Image (cartoon, rainbow, N blue to C red; front, side, top):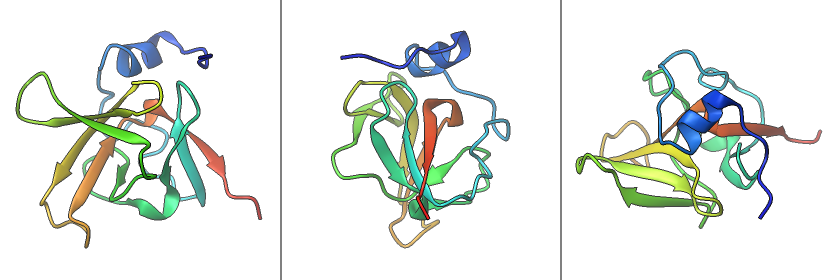
Length: 121
């Protein structure tokens, strides 16, 4: 499988499961219509209409493309990590039961783990 070339910082987050600082990523306040895709393999992950402002400083989504995001127990044993189901790239974490949206799910994603494909008008 061919992957997109990653910068050193993208590798630190996507491959080595790092985290970008809150309120610094290019997508945390982004409001365009389209699809958020995996930065490493370009798999569609989150439709823009599932994005919401959680106030956390990272892009937050209350739903994902069916089958595109895999949940695994985080190494710390307290959180659930989310990865791209296609390439295994680290996206962030998912939190459930917070009641921020009707679905009560928050996929908290590093902007650096994403690319964006605008909706064609």
